[in-house]
Length: 303
Image 1 (cartoon, rainbow, N blue to C red):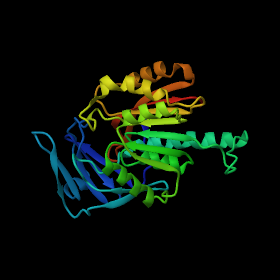
Image 2 (tube, one colour):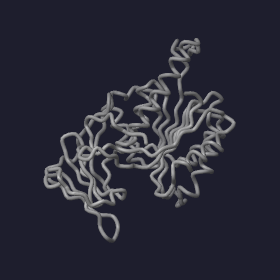
Image 3 (spheres, helix red, strand yellow):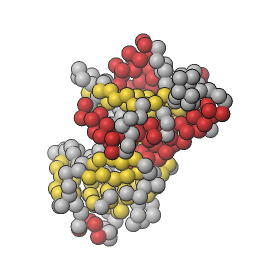
């Protein structure tokens, strides 16, 4: 399992009875988590003194109950700053477990830029190494986008929600990345990829975090199990000749990491390289155990 264990401003304090107790900076939140099927003793003091509690309804959905929680606050990961606020269906605007993938992508980008510099592959106009171009699809509030940009990549950030793209841009500004080469696009990801193929554009790395279920702007239905394989086939047409990586994130219950390995290995067989897939998780402070938080599949040309 790949652990996001480098956080200082975030931690899972405890888990029990279908919920997790988390520290987001100076604030404690209780949120539901379907992976928490155990009923252990709630010994952490935060269970009785939290700042926000999302109560799930038996009819679906739920609602927040707040106790001295600001409308918005910030936390940091390494040199990045994220603006948080509780909103629909228990979310805060950040999936902290994804930090393990941010670090992996950043390392790949920095290594490649160093290699290009050493081999003299520079842009004649700037004198800098040829840019590493990254495409982030279903990009949400921009954690992977900001991490890749901070590592030196040119990033294209695509999400169908205007609100999420606005939020991501605010995170970039808070992180001091406003002037970095990031393209912010509000678009349907499949339609965007199709247009990029027609334009003949290519990317050195592709990151995708597709939903388990969703609807497109014209009512198109997305189901992860049905759509992910043809979507990866489509995205493969955008990979450059010397592509570095492709990352798939999945929160779909029942979609094992081995499925992601199979998809990437078959679709990208002509690129060589290798594929790794695993669950991702967050350490739980009270027990020293790990809370599973979905799966990721990584194809990499080298390393």
